[in-house]
Length: 304
Ligand SMILES: [Zn+2]
Image (cartoon, rainbow, N blue to C red; front, side, top):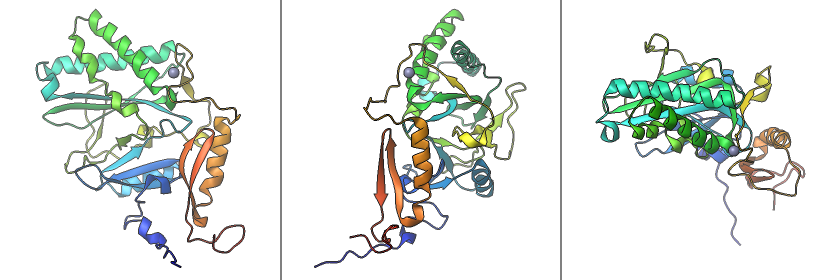
């Protein structure tokens, strides 16, 4: 007979308190730390923006990202990643790229407005590099069911292509919208954080004056995570024009709502000390990780 020697819990956490696996981190806000050039990460969870903000502000030397919850139920803020690499857009002068980016943001307001979401403002984050035009745009008051991001992208790219045509701008500029960020569990670099291996921070750009803030203080409004009980008014949510049910949603006979899933997630998040964590949530299923080295919370003895 062989007996498994359980690994001590410490083996799951590094010296900065980050978990090796996202699945061990069920909290509503997930922040990842990039640890090498090839993009390997470790994860840390927070329950409130206050806790997450304090951590980000105290760890400005790390390359920190927010891990989005796309496809895991619920809503998050509308955001866009605008990217133009020299090798793809070298033939387009910088002033035209800037104009295209401003037009894209206007197109996004247009799409949101059509959906009944009147976003009063947006935040621009930039990270200046010679070979790349890169901008991250967040609408702090506009939300989206993450399952409909592909629909938002489709409507946005169509609107933007139409607007580019109207201004007689090169049609290939429609590709400055990065579609890849709307996949599940995307890591978005956090405001004030470094790109791994570089000394360039992601900073706010005042879109009225064009001035880029230097050594700014982390602003939690630049994050896309939504926490219901931290907001006192109903969020403005984008709706697809064709009324689709979301690209990744499946129909099940079980009548579980997003609220049920949130309650289940909250209850399960309190069971971490018992060695029970959420591996994956896909309505109406929740897959759990069970640490068998811990005693069973009901029987108070080792699980068999
Ligand atoms: Zn949709």
